[in-house]
Length: 229
Image 1 (cartoon, rainbow, N blue to C red):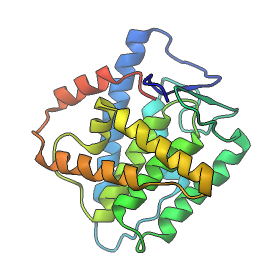
Image 2 (cartoon, rainbow, N blue to C red; image 1 turned 60 degrees about the horizontal axis):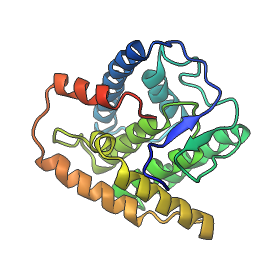
Image 3 (cartoon, one colour; image 1 turned 90 degrees about the vertical axis):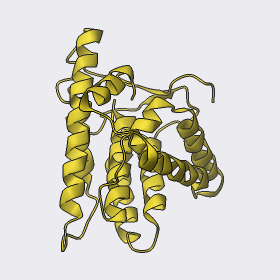
Image 4 (cartoon, one colour; image 1 turned 180 degrees about the vertical axis):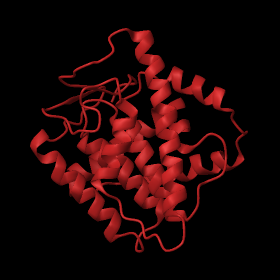
């Protein structure tokens, strides 16, 4: 893969055409999505609340990210899609709902059998592999995978620069880990997730030791990554 930014190419219905206004809205939505993830982590880490990853949760986090930006906010893409800067060709739109349900089943069936790091890596790869949305696939996959990681570990992880934020700052290692998983899946039917798991572990260590960020700093970070898919 070249060093260019990965981005989705699909029939899209943009509700905001002005790039500056769109960027501002993406920042606002990004903060709302961050808060929604935090709220759900707090809910699902309370005693006697067994976690289940549901299709509705994934759609809701996507809706928050694309609210007021895309007519397809909170819904699966209606047609095929390409990923600019990637060799991977996502599946046809008619297969998306079933594959996302299978992703949820994998997480739920392996909740006590596999490590939270593994399940986080799997969600991060698999949602990108399916690419279920016209836009916002990266943002949503990172939000969902981080939620799975925190709930799996049993608490909202401390630290300032969260794993999703660190990935947004430097996507090179993330893209390479996605490629390795894709290549393994293509060759054997099983994704090679070791590189993604190693990346998550290293980013988690940085999150624990990083400085505390203000909400204003988070807004600036989101503004710089406003064109991220």
